[in-house]
Length: 524
Image (tube, rainbow, N blue to C red; front, side, top):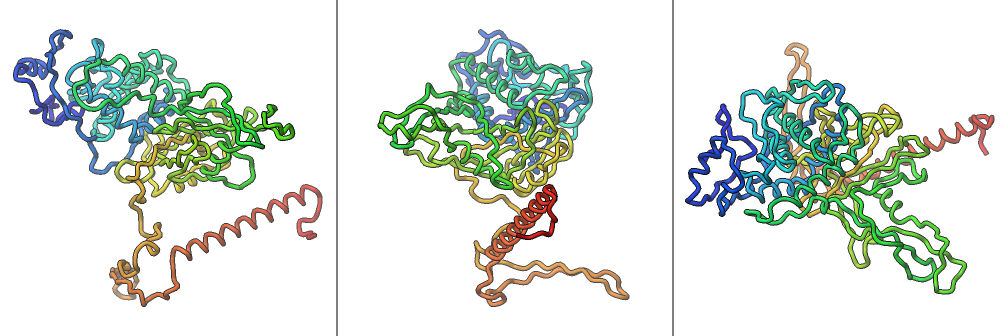
């Protein structure tokens, strides 16, 4: 059965479903649905057709791409937030599964007209966009991962109240979602042309989806219950007070729930701190309390700590960069994964590993203004892509290469503002595909399993430039037995790091002596 085809004969992505088993008494109803007829709620059959959830469509080259940001609308915060959600597998599974759990051929509620599926030759902002927020999220996921990105589409320009032409179905779907979201009570705060905080948008959008799902019909047709969207993101944190003399501790009030967790920058004890060290420092630091314990030791006071009572599926960190009403430009090292140690979890619970899925950057001297961009891990390839609105994406083989190329101690550079990570499920332990030169393959496999690919280009006096290529299998006897490329690389990196540290200390000492009036070459 072919459902809703466009003039070019291609099925609309919103209804690209698996074979549907219909009841024998519904052929006339299905024909009317195909003709675009609208129905009253009592027209629907008692037995709903079952639509198995199809896998998410994939592009042949699954390259991530940003969204358009019409001049004057200042929607970089929207683009960064939605791109981060689009590349978070747990949220994608929830959105697609929840939508398909209820029959996609029928409205979710009386004011919803089903998935947004444009069928005309030119996509315009005046198309039917009255599907509910969940329908628009579903449409955005579908168009983003499978839609034509070369087709001209019209989107709405908020500031001027006119339409502009952009390329790509994904931009049309984003415009439909944004216009629908702004009609909700959680979305009317996003005024036209004003810059907003990316975390405020994430929190309000997830709350809007949460309220919508609570009012969906109580009789789903197929699939498991995907739960509430806030359950993916909410952390439960307990403040407690522990004695420094005995193991006693007591809770300080009820546990609080957070959509995202604030992460302060540590003191300047290291030149470039690691993100893992920042988490350990923030969660394990001891804050002296004035309260005494009943153990009788009045000299040792208690300390206050925080404990993560509930670790969410998707953990979002907000880097607290405001220091004395100014934005801190400090950089830190961020890698593809980190751990929440067992010391900050409930007793008896093992450490939890998280894989970073998206990193949101902020550019500008103040957090109240500036520009948002995002780095995302591409679904399928495992590579990282830096997305700046609708500019061409820049890809990297790992997260640290992306972060180190962007963050600098400069207001015009990009600083990490948000880190979005998902619980490790074991399927992403293998490193993503990347050039052999960037992997320690020599320490993983025997040497004779590799071939040396040699490309030679030379210039002959009479014949000009000549090129050749040869593959030479490597034999264990060709290199000394003690030769280990991984250890050699580690040793060289350590020597380079020590040299840089010495140069930095010498430069700092020289600057201090110049500031105190001492000769720069004086030694003690």
